[in-house]
Image 1: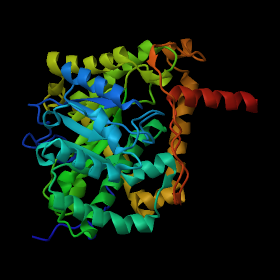
Image 2 (image 1 turned 180 degrees about the vertical axis):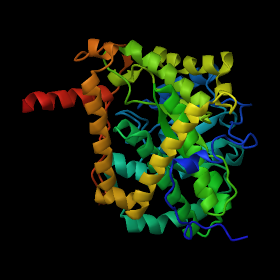
Image 3 (image 1 turned 45 degrees about the horizontal axis):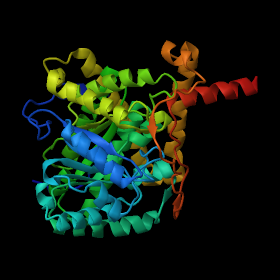
Amino acid sequence: MEAASISRTSFPPMDRSHWLEGQGTRSRAEPTRSDLGGGWNIVQRLDDPDAKRANAQAQEDLANGASGLALVFEGAPNAFGYGLPAKPEAIAAALHGLQLNQIYLRIDVHPASRATVDWIVEIMRRKRVDPARMKLSFGIDPAAIMSSVGRLRMSLEALRASMPQSLVHFFAMGIPAVLLEADGRAIHNAGASEAQELAFLLSSAVSHLRLFETARQPLIYAIPHIGFALAVDQQLPMSVAKIEALRRLWRRVQEGCALPPAPARIHAETSMRMMTSGNLRTNIARNALAAFGAAAGRADSLSVLPHSLPVGLPNAEARAIARDAQCVLFEESQVRLMGEPSWLGEDHDLLTATLCEGAWDEFRRIEAEGGLLDSLSSGRFQTRIIEARDQRVAEALKRSQTRVDSESAGTTASAATLEAQRREIPRDGVEICRPIEMMRFEEMVARARAEADTAA
């Protein structure tokens, strides 16, 4: 059998019929569930700049149903102006007293992700916890940082030269964790279409495979160390289809590399883009729909953004609402059955195939531009994201916004939040490109209306 290789893989054009034929139903033998007996990891974000306060939050969340924690550091695309200090002592303080071998721990993508691996391993050593026995995910994704921040701290050439050496070091530690993550949440929150988000994920994952191959690591052993993070929103059928489309696309890449397909490891987070700062109650409803979609789509882990995040750092009540929404789904519903082939109909399969077709076309376009980092460096991918965002906004203006949002347009709701100062994303770096600005949808629409009024 030919050795698995990404360098010899071609990505031919494929229409929707390909994604329907032989792909319409997930194999019942394919494992897609987490280690929690058919459920998923209920993940709570630790994004408080006060590490001791974050530790208290973690203690409360784990005592009341959460099974995982996501460390969100300052400067991260999904920190939304907050985040733990990116220092080893902050990690130690946030994790103090926690039984880490009993939970799922993920590090959200941030500029110092590579250094975080060493910090976490050292903390585990001090706590006498074997990292090989933990469920870990280290979020390293240069493309996610570059697209949202518009900077990399080293040139593309230096990155491509140094990353393989880091991978060799990681493999030598023997930690069974996700190391490289393809993270599409930031571009979703910037207005990308579902197909563009999927293409971003796929191209990022392919670039990770190339790094592993450059590091002379067999791809079959590299696959378990690659993960995915995506956004889910209130469009329930779309969220379920998007997760399934990612699985089909990733299988296709693995097959093209002569690899036996392994399931994608998918973390989902509810959309910031869909949230409003006006009628905060609607955020609770939207989060519930998004969480339902992630659970029905069989994501391996899920974070629900607290409904008050658009107006400040969420307090204990807002965090509890986000956590309890997942706990009810996990413990009191049969939502995972919605993802069984017997429950999914032809409409779902057609929607999934359509997403696959659009994502594959965009993925091939990115690859023709030299890969994701080169496409970002040239600004071509960002241009297409902005076009998609503007089209989405134009369609919203034609039909007007939903009633609940239009009633609260121009207002900001008050909510009890924690005292914390928002921080700007650091803009230092060597490799510079046009950043993709994250905006909530109501902000996109408000800006478009203001520009139209000015032009008039």
